[in-house]
Length: 454
Image (spheres, rainbow, N blue to C red):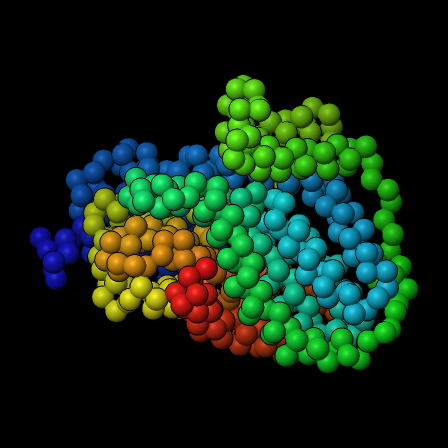
């Protein structure tokens, strides 16, 4: 049975995804990942004659294991105080120079997000410190939120970070459908290109926003002024041997991910090491094992600190997307977007739609798994559209809005704002900012990835 040239199974899979997205927008306490699996089983059994056992076999086990390995390792780095001390020492680099403080915090947030904890863990780590500093130096909580959340989201597509890993897994799955792209770039090159695209595109939105909405005025008021650095960032205790061991493990992780991927470097490594470090997740598991054996951190506390809600959400939604692909639902969604898109305007529409949905839903848990699989189909239906640009448009559009108080990141900053801040006004200002970024983000995606072809 078909309606408008689309099968009933495809319509039902689209309806199931729409329900999941709507519920994720209105009830963030309900775990839509598990709901998506349930819907996938129902659609598969009733409309596709597909046994439930085959539906659950579509669960992205590889992605799940990579996310668990990385977040567990950095969970241990967080609970044993390594990342906290690193943050304190880094903020002290400004030496009390007030003009350098916003820059130091922005770059520090990018660095911490990039090396592995990701945007949610990074903001959770930095928000209490940076929002307290904002209160002490007279910077508005709104401006500090733009710095911290903007920097964290711009760097969250690092191949070491959970959001970057999700993007990597979804993009890698496209390989058989768009062989021309993978003939031009390796998957690692695509990962880093998407990462740097995000740094540039989100920085273009966040930095001017900070300067226009109070940051420049604050900087001019404090030009040439210094403050006792110990009042805003007291010197922490020296790193313990367990923390130095943790730092070493983080550097080893980065080394084993980056260096073998460089041209001509693989032959320099023994085969057993390459097999053992086949992806960032396997390396993280091995290094986390050493950290446990040497007592570097409390593994039980690390497990509790892991973002299980998001991990299970993205994996669950991916199951429903797989059912959509098999039923023809993804093809129908692709045709709908392609109907009013050209090679350049497709970036605007992808940025706009993902931004609007992400303002009320999970960027990495719902929006990315739902929209990234559309890219191969759009390449066929919109000749001349750039695949990496579309991937970047979806990722950037989905994350530019995340300073909104409806997102985890915005909410964390509001919760940590100084007592004298009007939190009701801060909520309103961040909500306006977040919603406006859906339009601003769409324009940026159109300009950078459509017109300029980054």
